[in-house]
Length: 275
Image (cartoon, rainbow, N blue to C red; front, side):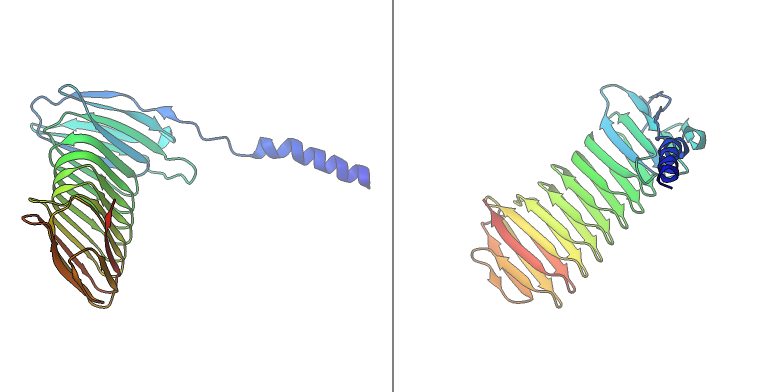
């Protein structure tokens, strides 16, 4: 009996690896190079995976990356008189690895729009108008200057070291704004909002959430007027010279500065200075 059990175990050890699915392997995405010298707009559509957008040094749009399921890939690049359209669809998601890794280099001074289902989007070192719309993918923006319109229903949105007219809209994901300047507005229903950095003359910050919390960490050198209101959430304004109550706070730090406005329904609000 013991010999029989031993034989069965040996057979299982030998056959289980043979029956296991093969490890997923990436295939290089066909590289594309598109002349963008006279172009003004670019549209990028990706369904699943990761999209990285960087500034290019010349007048060409460069497209590259990797695909996990090459047999399902839909890959199109089209140019019209003023617009370049890039569509990369995996038509299949993966729990273990991103089905697509798309890297696109774009010349500055082009208006850029990105549409995705649940692909994460990362944009760095770019100058001009940028719009990103996602259903559930995360959006990360670093050192982008222009008009930024960012929307993700369930994903998280992070904006760092950027300036211009910044609009961030979510629903369930967290919204994080760090060291931004210009006109900044963030709005969500259930997600939390975190703002950190310097606010001074010329800066306008509006933060709104229904049921999520708002946390603001201001630089010591900030100069601004502050108005905070919450319908039923607790408000804690730990700032010198600010008049605070359980549901509101008002006041001014410095003089001739920027403006910070916060509104919540039931979300808690915390304001403090950071060293």
